[in-house]
Image (cartoon, rainbow, N blue to C red):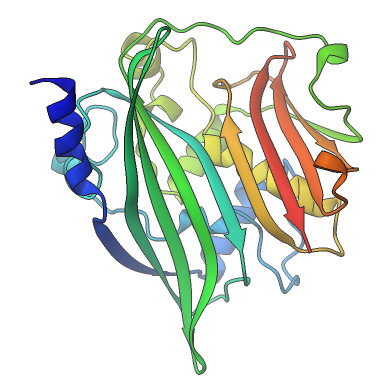
Length: 296
């Protein structure tokens, strides 16, 4: 089968949609705070606004074991297209926060395959990017209210030998940080985040699979976990201005038991006082994630 025929077949999934309903319970919120609250400010239990990133715990597919692939994800060919590349990573997301969800009210997530793009890289070979649009709505007495919109990009690639990100000295950082926060992601954090997001991807908790099959040097820190830490870190520095937009892009994997530094440039990107530039670097100074945050 040629690559052109393959991508034409995969693009048949564009427009495919699924809807799921879920509820933020007091216990879910308690577990979310218990998992992440020691790493970044999340506010307190009396705050009206809920912690940012909580939406990633909602509506995750409850697939039985025989419906999972080798990597622990749901087998491809259902909602997501059957991309014939074995490695999958969450590459980026762009999120718009319209309203804060409410505890105890049904929240519907509608997910739609928006685009499927095939690219070739000299370093990585074939790459397939699947763009997924998510919208979260909440029904009230006034009808459906749009809470959150997100464009998620998932990248599929061939197996390849792991190449460490290039370390950089602090003086070579792309931003001049006004605030920083150091964290050390351990295996308990990774396991508990996998649990509250019902994420079965084995690279986050199965050391033998991660090192023996996917070739990483250790358990991989979740991209959305790091993004959650970044957006709440940014919000804590702008307590009087709600976060309205957040965009992140992974640059390199981060690993368990290796220190990470969250960096924030307070004066914003492109001289925009309502926008801040953030990034995460590892213990060697290598760039792990970039992000921007927009505030009211």
